[in-house]
Image (cartoon, rainbow, N blue to C red; front, side, top):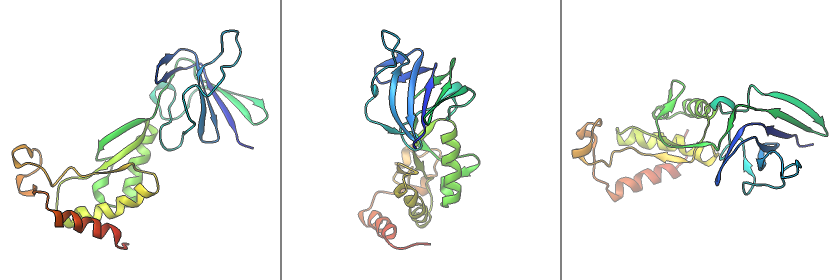
Length: 204
């Protein structure tokens, strides 16, 4: 039986505004409804009120009391039949944050080019409410960037990352700071083709 959890009492941020004393229903790992805690006559709000169901474990979904990335600190009560309610009064439930420029987190760097470091960074940001992110690299040796891309692209395919953000090397030398102008390069078709070729090749 799929566990159904009702997150209640918090202020819920929806596309059309903020709902005081809102309710978000989660079935398994998917958000299936979001809106006011009760209808005009005190009945449970119908619906999904916020569009299609959203995966609360990976992208789009939201967070909880005190700015944390999980529903914590509230009082839970079981109602039987695989349902429970979690009171988040005084807290907020917001959509997962999207970060398009992040180099790491939790003491780990995406530029290390290893899945282990990348996952440490990803999980650190998820605990604080970021559910979708691009892994940003640092301008450097082209062979090293290709190696990083090969490792990070596996996490893209697994859904852990939304993509890879190459901060360089295709940067104008006149606006390179803090990158050394020596590391800047013009975008050359064969250079980009080389990266994609390496990406397609098997790697360890």
